[in-house]
Length: 108
Image 1 (cartoon, rainbow, N blue to C red):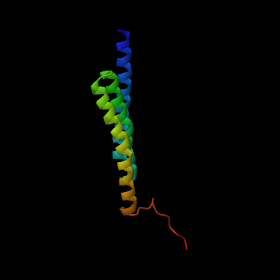
Image 2 (cartoon, one colour):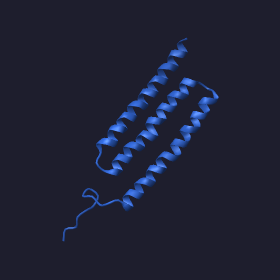
Image 3 (cartoon, rainbow, N blue to C red):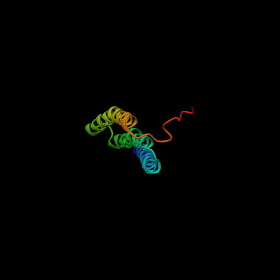
Image 4 (cartoon, one colour):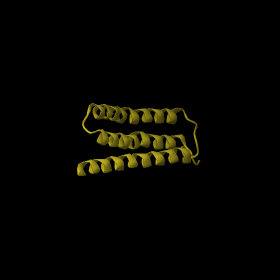
């Protein structure tokens, strides 16, 4: 009985932390001006927010086949999320237009 409440509390804390992180990331995507800053906010949601939510769901489900599947999804997200956001950042830095904050003016 007590163990179920502890497990419920841990899962609720993990899921609430993931939801708050996702809310902060959504705010950052709409608030920031530059594309690289927006992408950083969305990558934060991918790695931390969704990871906390999935960990909370793993705690809720216990040790079952469902938790193993959620763990596999979590591992794939940890591998692919940062790599894809890094590639998009490199593309933006190479192709994107120059803004005042990105370039240094030479004084002759």
